[in-house]
Length: 93
Image (cartoon, rainbow, N blue to C red; front, side):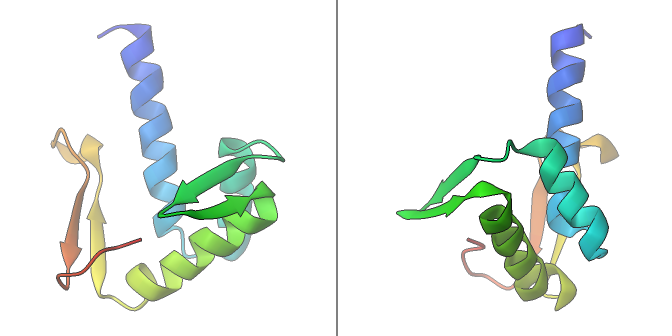
């Protein structure tokens, strides 16, 4: 395994973990580690801008999908090559 692959896998792990983090302070800290202050995410024509906007997006998604128990996320480092999401049939975001 190359260093590039390892770095990519670590980034994916951190990204997946932030969406499943139950502790609001740790989630906010993880967002700050993953995105720059002016980071932007685009989802279906909606922009989530800056760490405050990203925190609101991730927190809402956590509450709606993970905290509710409707979805579980299996991480790719659990022996699978893909991130798996299980739950009610609907679009996540």
